[in-house]
Image 1 (cartoon, helix red, strand yellow):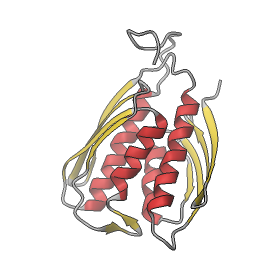
Image 2 (cartoon, rainbow, N blue to C red):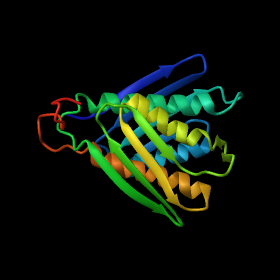
Image 3 (cartoon, helix red, strand yellow):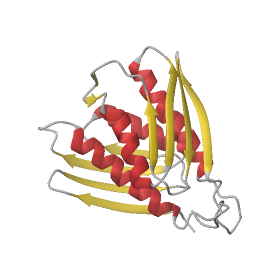
Image 4 (cartoon, rainbow, N blue to C red):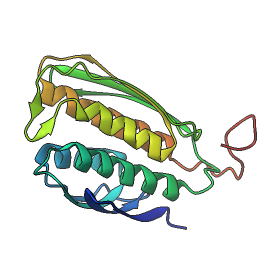
Length: 194
């Protein structure tokens, strides 16, 4: 059975379409209207080995907030739906990812308890057309809609592009571990359910 989901999120502020295949090849087509967000989500899909199609039309004439947030919410919903009952999963994933001088760590638990603790230490106001403050918010929104516990820290680095991209690559690698199928039929929990 293919683990995939298609989500359409339409509000007065945005129109987002997502197709996510968890057991993919890492192929991504991302068009949000925010170049650096496209870059981060493409890196996430590539290194998680997810196939991702994501298009967004948002109120970018106002700012980047609604578009970035709603893309993360729609992607999180697709992840949640693609995981189904969350049985037979590794559940936990953790990874370090370097990008030149930057080093990031991500730890994921698919236990359906949405919590995000994110410390990227970004200094710039913007990365391309994406507000630096939106990058941790994207991760928090992804965790909320995806119903996952997420810890992402950038441990070192002075280039904010490298810091942000390393964080998304570490998250991708952690997700790749966490969503791996174990062959078990039960949920990986002492409670018997996630």
